[in-house]
Amino acid sequence: MTILSERVSQSAFDGSRLRVILLLDLHDGAQNQFLEAYEHMRNQVASIPGHISDQLCQSIENPSQWLITSEWESAPPFLTWVNSEEHVATVQPLHSCVRDTRSLRFSVLRETGAAFESTPEHAKGRLQSAPRLGNGVVRHALTFTVKPGTEEIVAKILADYDSPQAQVNENTRLLRTSLFMRGNRVVRAVEIEGDLMAALRHVSRQPEVRAVEEAINPYLEQDRDLSDSNSARLFFTRAALPAVHHVTAGRHDAADVQRHALFYQAKEGCGMALARLFAGQDEENADDVASPIESSTIFQRDDVVVRLLEVSGPLDAQPTQALGIGGDRKAAMLERLLDSGAQGMPRNDVEAARFLADSEMDLITDRRSAES
Image (cartoon, rainbow, N blue to C red):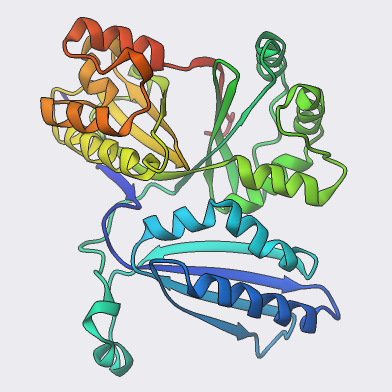
């Protein structure tokens, strides 16, 4: 088998310290309101486990531009916080002050300087051990539920939409959108080259997309009013399903793989641990030259975990590997974390194939942009 490309990897689970950067452009005259909102938010965030420090900075060139940086012991506690209802409520007062925002998240790879040398060891945390190789693709997903009994109507609406313009600006373009359903849950996974937020804003303004969103609006379990910016923002904030791990093995040609999505419901409070377990399994798959899995992207929010797989050949050819339970030890760990009800965990390939079929989401549409 020919090696086609280098291995690509991104992960929230390397244990290294996290630097979060929030760029803000304030409305005219909103400075005092913003400072009050920030003080409230800062006091709230300071009590979150895993938070180390934060800084508020103002541009010396354009006083309307502000920068908030925060440092965390690692990515998981930050992701738990940023995806929580508590976070939604805490940042709500900021929205009326801000014209535009952009959030960036970085693992700390190297650090020098006197301030670092004097920092207590317990506050330093780990540094990223080595740089990872990327391919310029940002991966993100949204998930939401529709009213039971409306699944077929929603699936048809989602399958029949017209694709929006792929080019966002000179630096950003849409690469691929995949839509899946399992029961009344929808997962929309996107791949973007460039700025994720710019791409999401671009997509939300396209008439083709707005028509689809308006068409499914009556069928959503969570009410939203797209004409109300606050209502729309809250919906999409709660629907965000971030990518916490990705690995591409680089062994298979893109034409030889098929895309699948597997849905896992974790026990309460176990979503992050479940995603971490799968991340370790998928790293092992990437090292296994016999593995049919070309790539895996793990999305996680609260107790919902989705694995998006690119697989060469049938998904159930190696069912335990596809499920992410290679080995008895991992199967036992998965059983402790997964809310599998009375079904229990599979103990052989036949049971694993059945479990795999139950976990697989239905592919509604999978579209690549013409440019990619």
